[in-house]
Picture: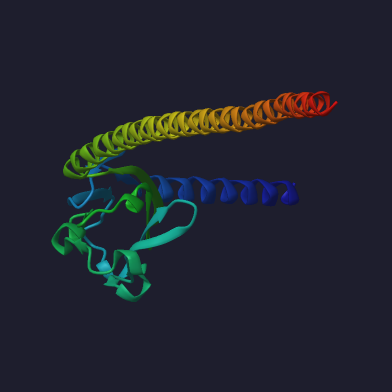
Length: 244
């Protein structure tokens, strides 16, 4: 019987401890005031969380760790036993984070992040631990390019298109110019070759005429030769007849 009573007491104590623990942990809560933030590059934004406070507890028991979670983890804000630890802050946030210490005493974590960058986008998680509990909550920040940058980029795109069109036109004009030059050169060569052929034909005709004239002269000489011989022979015959 005594052993049975001891077991019951032990079970009751364990259950009581579990209930007390759950009550203590449930009494401390961290909540983000806004789950999603949207901002432009180079602007400022304030991220805010609230946590449960107790008037009789000192801030020296307060430990806070706020981080940016992307493909890596970067420390945004760190408080250790009520004292801000700037050495823990990531270099990318250096000089850009301001905390409201008065709000911290009231159970609010207000962090102003200035000169926003595109790479500030991501999930921000804030963990708070005290001697009476631990809790955490997170929010999403999306930083977009500034409107003036988008406007400045649009003319650039238009100018690029204009440059492409101008380049294409220049190439087309150049191609036409080259084609015209080639046509002129080919035409000139054609007429030069034609002229040369004409000169060659004339020269050949002249040579043929000279050859034919030479042949004609020779024929005349050949034809005239026998006539003279015949006259001489007739004269000789006459003289012989007279002598007889």
